[in-house]
Length: 71
Image 1 (spheres, one colour):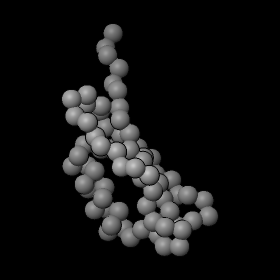
Image 2: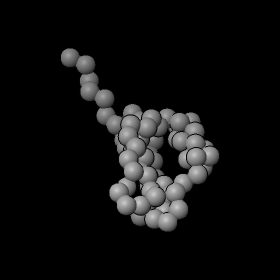
Image 3: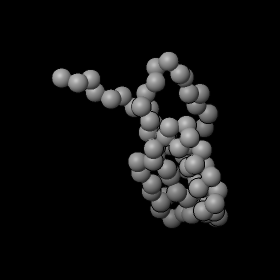
Image 4: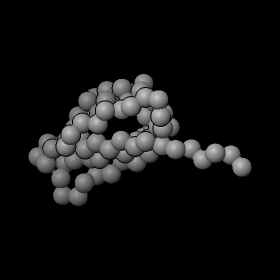
């Protein structure tokens, strides 16, 4: 039996309540994520706002630690 993949996830909300995110800004951010090995698995609009939330994953690398930003 093969070993199951383990993943790390990243979630980020783009835009603000009054102003959405520009396509070029979102594209630049996602390009950077792609270079870091992240794959977008979901995108959802946050109800009653101009915000969108991106969820991405990449294989877990136990030798490299990703520093998470504080909320």
